[in-house]
Amino acid sequence: MTYPRRSFIRSAGTITAGMTVGTALPLIADLQPLTTDQLPLPFQTLTQVAEQIRTRQLSSEELTKLMLKRIENIDGTWNSYATVMSESALSQSRQADREIASGKYRGPLHGVPIAVKDLCFTSGTRTMGGTAVMRDLIPQYDATVVTRLARAGSVLLGKLNLTEGAMAGYNSKLPVPVNPWNSARWPGCSSSGSGVAAAAGLAFGTLGSDTGGSIRYPSAACGIVGLKPTWGRVSRHGVLPLAESLDHVGPMARSVSDTAIILQAIAGHDPLDPTSRVETVDDYLQSLESSISGVRVGVDEHFISDQVDSEIAQGVLKAVDVLSRQGAALCKVRIPDISDHMEAWSTLCEAEAVHAHQAHFPERRNEYGVWFRDWLDRGLKVSGTDYARAHLHRLASNGKINAAFHDVDVLVCPSMPLLPFPVTEASQYGRDSVAPLLESHFKFTVPFNYNGYPTLSLPCGFSSSGLPLSLQLVGKPLQESLLLQMGHRYEQVTEWHTRRPPMRG
Image (cartoon, rainbow, N blue to C red; front, side, top):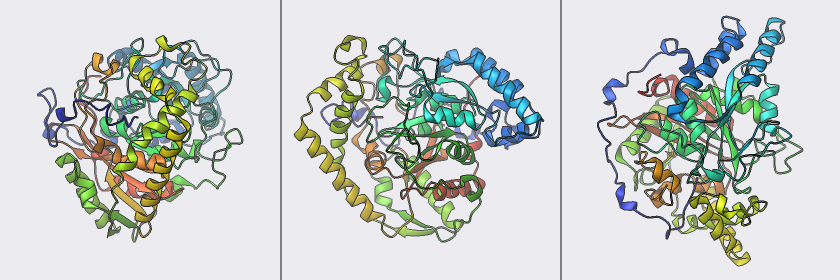
């Protein structure tokens, strides 16, 4: 996602705290919780269908056929998929069934249909990165995350749509994903296709990427779980970059245990990515049931509520109470004002994006959409001094956040401060695609791209107008297990993750 410069943000006054949306949305009373066994099969959790496949109550092939048919029937409305890989998916599902029948079960991803953001290289299948300039790019190798998902036995349904270059606006030659909670509302970006596919029951788990909020925003907007790992915990080899010093790759799904399963498969050192972490990967599933008693949870009520929609703030504070009742030790903290450091994100991202697109830009400038073209144009003007100044702002922000974390294990805050704003297809393609975003949007995301801390976003309620609310848990480096424990415990005593969008199909 993006942190546009102050001069770029327009129409900020069009969104105000506590605003409601039109009558197309259901009342909160109509969004009744369902137990997982009541949910239609496409909306059941990855964890649940994995058990059915393991015990051979359900074959991978029949589940894959069901999902491919569902994509064919309804994704023309939701636009989550850029490329559907039907033939290879069916082949993978049949192989999974043969292996499971012969006793060669690989684990909870074996035979489960998933999808990946169309930044991830897939050998022999195009990877467009949301651009027109790369519409014919056919990689000759798989991204490491794709290889690892295949090694875990998953079935790859296809590649998911995103904003152009993983920034904010879409290229007019490609479709815009549609939020299944309300088609007139923002689906988040840039991993919008990943969020929509998981929320709409079009995949049992997805991969997204996050440079300034792009796992967290679509997870929040689409009412799902998203985990941004520690920078370097997941390899970026074979993943088209936006800004490599800020980019993270992580799982998105309908439950915390689902994200744990996917993270288990993709995490770990990769010799092909020299920035990947060498530390041993935790057993995320085994640690899910661990007690959270005594975990020090940092709470700054001013940080949570300042320039934040009142319903979102209340949802987060109610979630804090739930965690406290489960044994977490609440600690008052003060998150320092880092607003002066946030604008530096644009400078860093613009410059690194030009580097990432140097094979095509500026020579093929006119093939880019207006939003990303403008972004790259600005990147060409970033001087070495500009970049150095921005980097120092990043370091200052990191120092302040590190100090705030000194006496706590986890910080709680919103995933984003406002409800998804109104959009049209035209606005998503144009220069004003994220104009309604306020600067307060980025205080909950950019600092944790700066410092690479892991974050977990998960549903914590619904607004009175029926839009999802989202809680963000932030941990210290390589503390994904603790975040997953916290999120899983919260899910065990709440039911927000069981709600499904009021969509047809």
